[in-house]
Length: 112
Length: 112
Image (cartoon, rainbow over all chains, first blue to last red; front, side):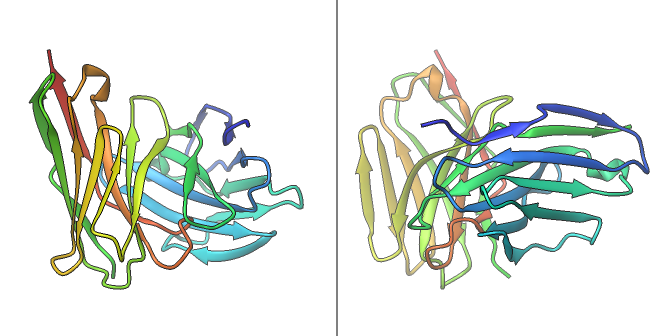
């Protein structure tokens, strides 16, 4: 079974631009979560989608948004990029029983 | 809010046992997790324990949970150089691993 796949692996953007990150969950998984990982703040929960609906949301500004498609693939969008948005963005899908989380390798976003 | 704390660094000799500790504050935590992150990779779920258990063993890994003190530990027996990585403790409520709270990670260095 293929794992969680994220694309692209690396992104370089400048301040003020916007960016879209993509995530494909493990086949059959319906829940997709997004996390931001930085050296200073650690792993911070962004949001979770289940069956195309946002089920949970973390404490991030409205510039961070996401969506999920009918095939459970998810995208995350960050608008008006700031230098502080530079981070590793991790996507994860939950097992059907909701007990386990499986992570992708992440997208490393650098805002210059 | 919920908080998960871990010591930042641990160094051991190859062949010794490693013990990584974690404390959490949320008494409603249902599942407690241990993840491993190697450089340039996402998080890999190592093991997890339900809150009504006090111990779980999985090959070289032993998880101990003291629910009264909200203390979780991960023991790695016969530690190898390949175990060098960052280890994250996390907790979730209910069967919703998608919204987990993570500690800042413990960097384990295994010296030959």
